[in-house]
Length: 368
Image (cartoon, rainbow, N blue to C red; front, top):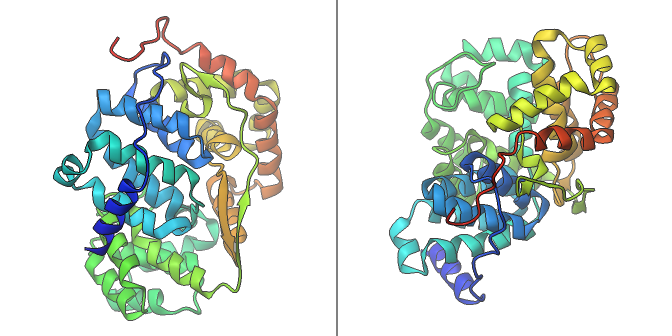
């Protein structure tokens, strides 16, 4: 297998990375997994390696699942060969054992993931497909559409990318790849893969998407993103301003996010205790949706940033539509969302202080 040989050669050509310095950390697998993903997004290799080493000690099964998801969700088009290698080797325990072991291979791949150009376009297009108000009618229509109608929509390059992605999602099956905003419909990824093959998606991209479809729903639209990227007459890799490197409980502050128990509690307090944010929420956001809104705002301000973002024709518009889908309510214009995001950025010190209140009194170092 060419992919296997490429990975083996790449590992042999690089020096083995020693285990990282074991500073005291909160030994929580959710925090470690969150820190791993944020650190790779930002190119913070040292923090990513520490998170990976911690997961290998306390939840080794979670490390390889998380790395495959990170590759598909956060690197994507930025380095498709690397994504394929990560997703393939994540399911090859015996191969990893015979080629240096989990740490040797994981550290090598993490270093490459952190340095790679990155694209979250597969995530963004699914956010739009699932939540943007402009697709409300399509979400209802496609639920009752025939398989042939869905295939026709996915195949039509005159249709917008988010609408094609929505049709692809239903074709693969929202029962297999659920979203809280989409009704459950049976489907089969194999039917969608046949459509992609007819659209002349490269075999390598199809193979990667097939491996990844069982792990994360972003994989099911990766071929569509590839087709869109291929049409672009230009591309570039942009550097983005990143959050200050603040650490809480040994982890990057952004690891304390909505996907960790302590992080979500801290965000709830921040929503109630930050005066400027409270004023904005009371004026614009219904009580029942405020915590989710704040969690997404904080992601926009810190957690979702990329050190090297791959962009091309249409990518910036896709990113803005995804932000609108996540944050714009019926009466909330995008300009107001940007205002709220700036409020969060200006008050991150207060958020960090609240997060520190949730750090256990005794941090655990390696082996503690």
